[in-house]
Image (cartoon, rainbow, N blue to C red; front, top):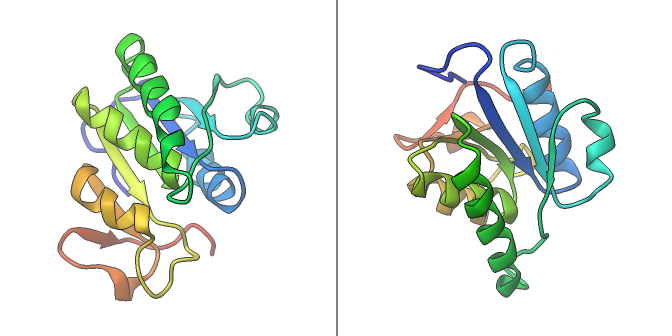
Length: 157
């Protein structure tokens, strides 16, 4: 994964739902923390303790099964990005990550969607939407790569 045109100490906003998405995000950002300031966001306040020493933004959890809950999450990201302009937003999913990607794109912020390794047969619903919105979309399975979704490896090795 490349973060082209970003320089050291710029800010990356890293967002994921609690659980497997969050664990994958932490594995990705571990390699970025020496070069960038990482602001984390998730749906569970317990995640703040997992990124001790980094700023943390709590967001509302929602899914396609309760879609109206997107509004507090999306508008929260809009408020955050209007005041704090990270140079990039990275998400491993799920729906709250998609809300962040959409909000970031409205501000012209570079966005990267990394679909979960659990999606081995097809991209997640959020990933299928993100591939048309995000600056870059990655899959962790070579069979799912196409012209719009890239494969460069997976988080778990």
